[in-house]
Length: 404
Image 1 (cartoon, rainbow, N blue to C red):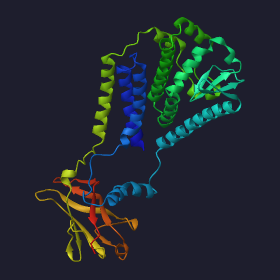
Image 2 (tube, one colour; image 1 turned 90 degrees about the vertical axis):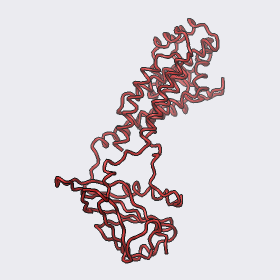
Image 3 (cartoon, rainbow, N blue to C red; image 1 turned 180 degrees about the horizontal axis):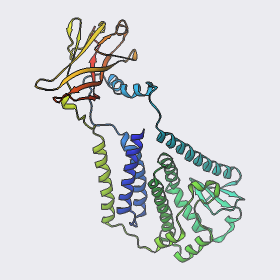
Image 4 (cartoon, helix red, strand yellow; image 1 turned 135 degrees about the horizontal axis):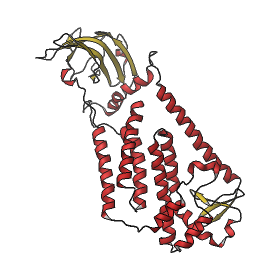
């Protein structure tokens, strides 16, 4: 968990700085919006993408492959060691997650209470909620919130168009998505800055729609915004509040809108950086001791096990031996082995030992396809200088036990 949070947070920091460097000054607000969303989603999910490496046999049944892949994760979830202590940082993290989740739910509850206390009607493709609360008009999905009496104002049309654009472009979905991301990465200030920038793009896009798309006079529209600022502003729902200042919005209205090739080139650079990040992280980091892993052989009372042919499920004892590779100057001493039996008809169970494993009747009771997964947890490496180092071997050793 700590590794995921650390790596995702580093990626978020790097990509936000790249966003500020390459994207933020562009006037193509739609591109800025989607790039901001993509960065947020990417940084929270790229570590969850599957690895390109695999140690499973190609001809092994698909169901068994999935079961074998899950062995390590299931065991780590179900196995509890009394020596393990929960990291103080994880405790602090989950306290923060709980606090910001509560903040989100309180804000969402404020909107629900506002709906229940309002008079609802259908108008302008909205469900209009007229409330006694002193608020500026704002929309949440297809619900338009206005103060009672505001509908009679003759100059309300530009504000309605502004909110219609928010609804049609599904800006509320962006807002909810960023609330989830800020709960997940509440400790990283860059997720809050990214959220602010995307919300600013929402307002710039809606303002441009009213002025350029619908032809309203810019000066008259700015005067109207001074009188009634649009955007969510109700105190109990301030978690979704619009923090873009009118000065920023007015400045953006004065800028000439461009959609040059340079804009897309800048966005392409960010996307290429994301692709490289996925490519790098999707490959497993090789074990630095891979070239030192000894030869592993298995024996039963009948002799050495042929891994390709499998092992009889009537076997009651299995011996594991580790020997140096030919020409190696290293010596090995087995320290600990963990064996897991996986079966599509039996489930799984795990046992630990030194060099010998007595499966008794359990192995013979297995139904269907099965496999023994030998995971060497530790072995000793002794070099020429007589220095001893303990090493963990990550790769499991699969043996088919379907032979009768």
